[in-house]
Image (tube, rainbow, N blue to C red; front, side, top):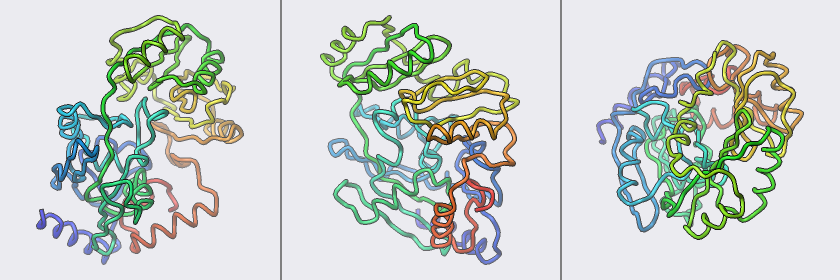
Length: 354
């Protein structure tokens, strides 16, 4: 693999010398996410393979171009999983794309985000230098925070070569309960349940129906099921997969105005916005199709203590992500300059002016 790293370094140094943008890309399954990609493509797929996997230590290290399907297959053989349930959005999705996008599925609210499972990472910066952060164990704190910082950075700081992730065993038992509830009642109930010792691993409300997934030890799932009531759906794996991959009917609506992702405090009441919505993560993540003005959507979310992302489609000219405050924007600029002094890696991918 050394010859691949050498080729990457040469491509990066040429681009830096010419101040020419590089678009870091695997299969391109998530190229629609964020601002429009710019520049010459640097293909990460040629740098692939699982470097190390210790099932007894619950740690896997793999290169950026490794297909997510290969990682999932290896974990399946040991009855383990990536607990943040990363969406693929395409059959060729790679680990690098998962890490760079920082997106997680239904289990994220209780298991944690991508960054929470990052133990270490290797980065090639804008000078062509290889930098290693963190390690393969939680006790190795040197560079640990940098590894977490790289998760969700959209490739703006450099080329992540490999990642070490904590993995978890799959639950012994799992079932889904369905409840007929209004939006307001669903939010109230989810927050009540969130304060109890219940093995909740996923929730989703849409059009008067709340779906609640329970995962864990058989005794815990059985006790929770008896306590909560509801209609049991014994095999709902296809439903949760459709939410994770956005293949559920909800996501196939008219995309003229785009799909909005609202990140809010879980206790936030239903916002006064027209359109159709779907609520996940115990009320903390809310998907919205609406013809409301983008400014009004952002203002209501900000007033509630949250923020908004224009997740799919729509007009991106005003910015996909909520603009950073001045102090945070300066921190972002400082980090970008430190890792990528020539500004070649995915410029403007997160923020048009940064």
